[in-house]
Image (cartoon, rainbow, N blue to C red):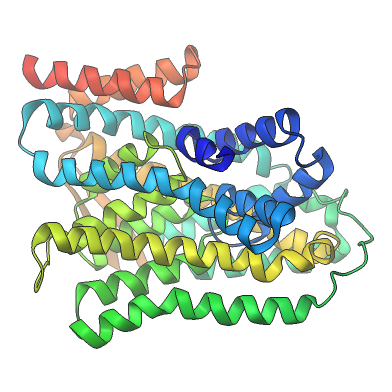
Length: 424
């Protein structure tokens, strides 16, 4: 019941969700003490996937084994997934209604400010040396101007941090990494093998079934493969992978437009549960628009369910496989250095996301150009959407000047968007 309650009220993104879990689990219920909670959080940050979901799963596992981990992880995600499905249905069938279009217009402005706010927050935490600033800058240049794959950027940053951590740990801020570990968990390799065998089977079974029943070229298979790949490279939180995901689903797969991607992020920000539930919105629309042999509604629901499955099953799998190794991982200075470097690179990736969103929210037409390896986006400065710019300025004032909460900003901007829709 406690995890169901947390799943229903965990608004506010990863930072808010982690703070709420700390209050309930450490302060109120006293199920886990402060050091173990922080160790669990550090472990979750080492893994690909949504860290708040993985933290919940790990604490559940710590308290009650596999059953506890499953209960915590599933109940943390499920309420938000149902809400996101409802919002996706409303989005698909409600387009063209003035009030809904107006609300979405206002939410776009709020999303732009929310992403910038995340950029500033993560940047302050991660960029503590010239090396970290350099890694962030290189990541931005690599993904924005050279269209380098996100996994390549993550891998390069991890390698740099792994190498530097041995000789100059101060450059990546890991002076306080634990030097010793507790005794290893009994049968940890057997536990990890069983978890991997079961988890990998569950993870890929729906994708294999879709390929056998619908053919390898079907959109369901493409959804399963794409979001499975994301599940492996989602280091640094949802905002990091959003830039890569947004450009892939818009420019490569053509499942949606850039403004629709912004809409999806705005809707995900209003739901309880992990922000990465925006992937469910993408999966729903992708299947909804290529439904054969199903009806659009049935295809959308299956696409949303498949996306959620291949996003969160791996996240829970990493916890069950890696939990017995927690202390050894925490004591590994080089691994901590790799994680710190990835976080720095993520700042550059989120900056890319901020610029990409700003261009598509504030200007009518944005075109991509390429000359050899160099890529850039062209837009007409005279095509600035003044109404969108004004709403973005209002959202920025609410967030940065008056420090209003995320949900409050989104609701206010949605209302202002409706007013704009009917006034101009």
